[in-house]
Length: 340
Image 1: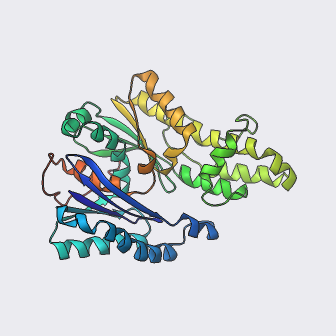
Image 2: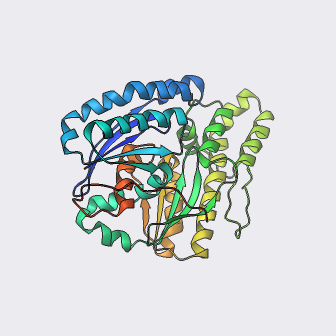
Image 3: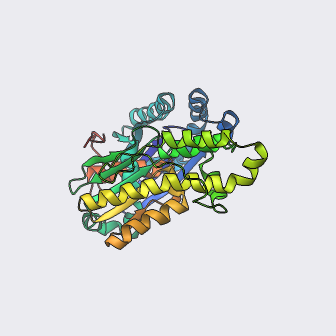
């Protein structure tokens, strides 16, 4: 079994994965409440909290450590002080328990997280089930990254499109801050948007040309700021649902349009959605509406596997190595994301 450690940002997480059964156990310690005081993640504080949380999480796995045959840890991308906490723990365990250790790229793990449910449904038949879904267009949308990637039949990952500036998740959080909503504000924008009019404010769509798959969200934030400068606090309070709905629509419509364009430019057998922003219900619905008319299954990571979590790290370590069920070790491998 594989024990994985995740500490790339503000979530401390451990997970145990059995290729024959799936994810056996997953624990996450969130720091969101502490960082809310500062309006965003403070790396030094986050690393200190990892230092406290990771040993406590490991204690909960103590009785299962004799069953572990493999260790995996997030190597990046992420906040260096935070990553170092997880890597230090993983290396210490590897030396103490004489277990092989593999480093996992956080973004690649997000891509593979869309397949965790496929494996859980039929672990023994996973290889064949995954093969039938490749090549796969993965959509990774988080606070730090917005990518469309191709996962091919050889499990190579190539970037198809990406944002040229801010990530969609960053646009959500910074837009929420402009609107006076607390951190993390993306979910609050979605909540207010449910009562708003998506056409009330014509916010711009970055790089609207269909042939250009690049995405851009920085201009959207600027447009929101200019709009808010025209409004009093009383006007903002009344218009908040419409502002949130229009702002969210500008983000999601761009993501949907670029996904549709990518699907029209190449051949895929499935589409996947992962990353922290993938928990947005409107986004899930809109991207499903892009995939299904084209006859493509939509693989959306489960909510608990959308944010930073160790389950996807353990699964990616196994899935990337192509291990058969019951194999004892994952060889060290380069888990980088290739450029298109």
